[in-house]
Length: 401
Ligand SMILES: [Zn+2]
Image (cartoon, rainbow, N blue to C red; front, side, top):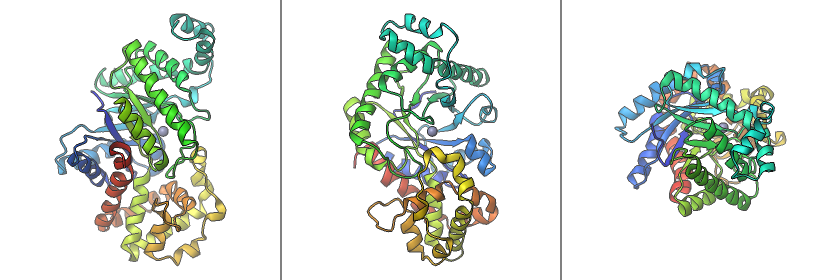
């Protein structure tokens, strides 16, 4: 099973927007570019929403049938490990093996030295240093890969290895070492998600040095090309950009590097579709606008609990959060202006956006009341979901805006 050159990871927390998300890929196809959707949902999201991976499969398959989509599409078991992979084995055909927690754990005595001897292409001291940091993690990835392969059969799924949810970024040189170690583990990886320099907070723009990012991204692409040639890793191996949604200031850099090198990319969007659901509800007014305000009030009241699992990937300025009573007085326009990711709008409020981003648990608790409004406001929501993915993400990254 081969992952195409251009893919976009789409999250769908409540499994109601697969068709609207697919519509963005259909727009791209009509403009001459094949971009395959990958529906990703992490174990953390399933736990918070109380959903099963099989529901994502049902929603994706239904959308593909209803839209006569004939290009490939995938279902990503996002950020899985040995302890939680089981329920993803059947419905998923893409596995993001997350070994970030294993980074820095020392390998067996002598293993780093043996690795360096096996790989004279690296300068010995730096190979040993990188192996001390990453060898154990790649061995862990090997264990998880072999468990999935035993269940699904080799070649029947796409493998990604992710190291993004950690504190320090990996340099392109370290990426070279990591790929050598992954090749030694015989993991046929098709995408790798390093942690890049700068901040990739959920639902908001990139914070960091854009020129440095572009150089690093370009050097990572070169490290991948070299590893493919040297170790026989899959030829379509490419970078996966996690929390890739809304990183508007680096999209031109990504596009330039893709153009220059012919490389592919997997842009994994975070839960921005859920925010488009809130925008569509707020736009619809009446009871739907009331519910979107109620979500804010509840998220505000439980902000510490909601933010905790995402502490490393959000930066909320509490002084910029309006009180729920103020939000209760908002019009549709005020609510959507604060939330929609339009940096040219002075009313855009990144703190509100990030709080609501992690606030999907509130909607999950509303159950049917929430999902029945998703159905009755489907047209407004779908318009926002599709346009967000296509205009704000696909166009600048894949076509170049
Ligand atoms: Zn990630």
